[in-house]
Amino acid sequence: MAERSVLSIRDLAVQFRSEQGTVRALDGVSFDLRAGRTLGIVGESGCGKSVTARSILRLIDWPGRITGGQILLDPEEPQPTDLTALGPESRRMREVRGGRVGLIFQEPMTALSAHYTVGNQIIEAVLQHRDLSKADAKAQAIALLGEVGIPHPQRRIDAYPFELSGGLRQRVGIAMALAGDPDILIADEPTTALDVTTQAQILGLLQRLQREKGIALMLITHDMGVIAEMADEVAVMYLGRIVETAPVARLFAAPRHPYTRALLRAVPSILATPRQRLSTIGGAVPHPGLRPGGCSFHPRCAENLGERCRREVPAPVPLNEDGGASCFLAEDAA
Ligand SMILES: Nc1ncnc2c1ncn2[C@@H]1O[C@H](COP(=O)(O)OP(=O)(O)O)[C@@H](O)[C@H]1O
Ligand SMILES: [Mg+2]
Image (cartoon, rainbow, N blue to C red; front, top):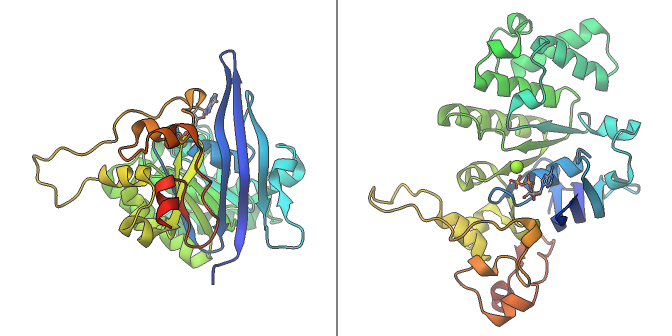
């Protein structure tokens, strides 16, 4: 049995307007985030991963706009909340942002101020979302710092962010995200700015927190290695669409979309001899304003069928447990 869905994205569309015209950054994105599970979202830079995360938190600023679809919190409850229907600064949305849904950024200083101690910032975040006295909020902040593996939290609570290493700063960023006791965490490339050893430690921490607290984790990365390590389910994004979803084992054993296969070929293999070049995907992600017709991936696709892929758009990925791929080859195989 699948776990209950806590967040359901349905046909989400986001556009950015500019003098050159309208860019469809997200063009019909659908997926579910399930209680206590980790959903990995993977794709090259510019595919719409961050726009998806920011849309859920209603942090898309002008000239960006949600133009269609729904973002349903508690979709299986009798009365789900559609976050797209709330004002970005409404009281309910402020409760959700940082409360039910925590956000971890690639660069922790996005969420932190350089001018206040980490303790004051976490206390502030705790007080925003929980009805506690100042003294209890401070105790809570110290407990959070301990929970994310910061040594001597009673002392470190008085440190300023610049006094901490990159790894410790990201731990503080995670403590901030946990301040409102969320059951959903969105982490947007949380380890991309860190060295390999620190990256492994932070991923280990996220995994432990996710399991202990039964959090639904949406983990955004461009790194298939991180996906293999962390994800239960995976959604592969290309040019503002989900092109494949799968349980992680199936994705690696039998990827169905040529884009997924290309991403997997680009992962360094421990079996590759030093002289073998790392395979890269031919061509670059086009600007979303120049989205190719038919299947958006067809100009870069090694397996493209010609005419059909140039003209017809393959059906979106089905939202069942086994997932699937938005590709004629996968449809024909099924
Ligand atoms: N502030 C913005 N203004 C205009 N276009 C934007 C803005 N933010 C994102 N976009 C468009 O959305 C696309 C997807 O961006 P993003 O979600 O940041 O990609 P990534 O998958 O690398 O996180 C970009 O290629 C860009 O065309
Ligand atoms: Mg991004």
